[in-house]
Length: 287
Image (cartoon, rainbow, N blue to C red; front, side, top):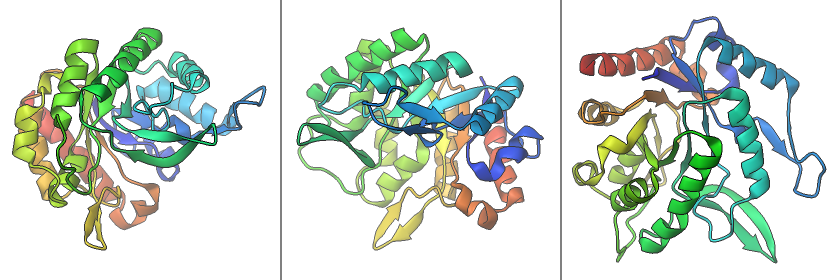
């Protein structure tokens, strides 16, 4: 059990280090802190020395988790081995207790080249996805030497005639290939708000013993859709889901608050701290 964490944003670099924000760990999206110069370059991935020094300072005080957005684990294309090599180097450097990615894809083929679309797009919910993603999860966990979690995705509308549900896909990958789950409760609430699924049905079907981490966040309405915008404190519906699942997840290791730094001023320092304290209280009630 790590406790309560915050997704890294430059806006609260110092606030994490000096203890102003009450966090037990920091979660980092490595794709935002390295620059991919292309597979043809002798040194493909470059990160700023200042960022590396910062992460070393944080790691000396608390755990650092890695949460990827660019692996495209569900893509029909083979995994990008150069990307995996860089991820492995960061795992060796920062020693996270686990790491995670989205049950999604972002890489497609265009004229024989891999193109990153910059979005985590949902996969078909079927056995083919299980058979493609599951072995990759197992191989990554074995290579990186720690659990590899998959995060439930956002669906802005229901897709008809899917052979499986997302919980069934996650359950199958966990059971057959040893994967774990990062349960993003705001993603689930986005899907409920947009009419794509039912929260009670989803949680009743998901094997909650596979959940190692939970995300909470806030969103916004835009053009008739509710967006996973990470733009504020979690709505009360997300807190209700958290209270429901925390007690039912025996292997839960952390609750992470996702907030974009551009919304930090609007939420306020006290508001961010209040979210972290409320998440900690949810854990404390179970303990």
